[in-house]
Length: 79
Image (tube, rainbow, N blue to C red; front, side, top):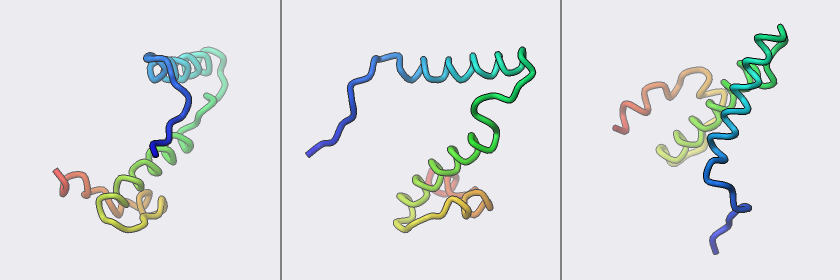
């Protein structure tokens, strides 16, 4: 059986990013940190990289391994 979440409008991806951009601009204008900081963004990207590395290698991949650069060359090797 296929599992699916709630239906989303076609522009939900764009709207989510626009909210982040609006927050960054407001943070700059207001002299405050953005709602999502650099570390949060870096960790989100590292989690996605770990998922793809795990799928490519067929084994678990720790986010710490990705952050340490252990799979920086994996994308080039799989092209």
